[in-house]
Image (cartoon, rainbow over all chains, first blue to last red; front, side, top):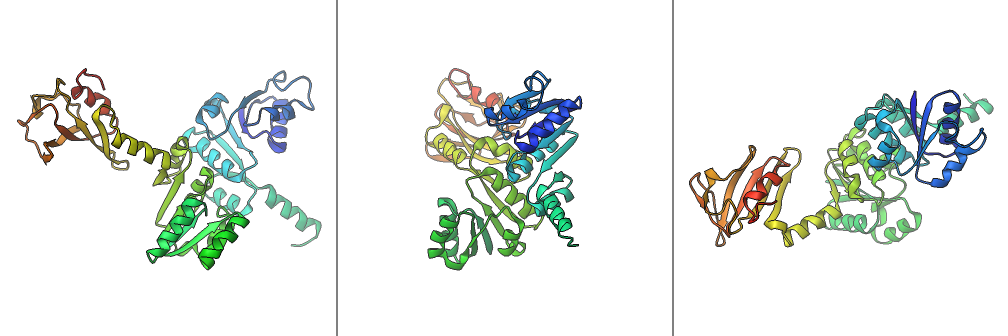
Length: 140
Length: 222
């Protein structure tokens, strides 16, 4: 599977690395060239040595998405640090490029829920954290 | 009319003030605490503090009964998503979004955010009107209906000068609807002769301009 990940922060870069290790083709897009370092650590050789792709650019620039391979992508992961950016680019991936699988990180649990109702596959770390605190405190 | 304005920058604050002067009920939402406190000195209860991309902030402002939501923050993603939620979740009838970077206009369209207003585009239109290139002015573009009206100057020595309207070679999907001559306008008939120095108004399908302009320029180029 060819996976395009936008945002090489803590989450995006780890998901990229495990996906490459599992044999998937992975391309990462991030606006900060230095974020490449996160992809290099913890493996044998550089990110590229392991078969990964990396493109510098912002995800609202269609040219950057195309250069990163969105037209061939089977899956798209929106994992930048901004909810609003993630929600916009996920919809671009789904509606304009018709990527088969689009997964978007949305910190705000209420909007994650609403956009999920609209058909986006959302993951809300905040909702998970709340749930885990509830379990830890045994609050139902 | 109840109007919610998102973003208390120069555009949003002045917009809110103007609408209130016209007697409209307005709530302005500003997410920067210091900016909010400044605006509150003047607008008092008509300004609320918060991030309008959060649903509870919109609900506190009473979005369900809003007639119009105007998103004019400096962030295009914020403007897009506030309008999308206003329209699709809270069923607000009318939305207006500001486009900061004209390259993002395509994304507003993709998400169905119309009208999306770009200051850069507006100024470009004004420049075009004041300094018409090849004598061409866009008078009207009906995007939904896919029609445009343009004004063209008929150059002396162009293919169209001295020709009857019916003989001017225009592409399918375009029509001369008016001729302006000596400060007067009239609706031409098929046998009306167009003269150099006239201005003509054409209605056309978008994208046909380049096929039309060569008929009206001296060197035959658009």
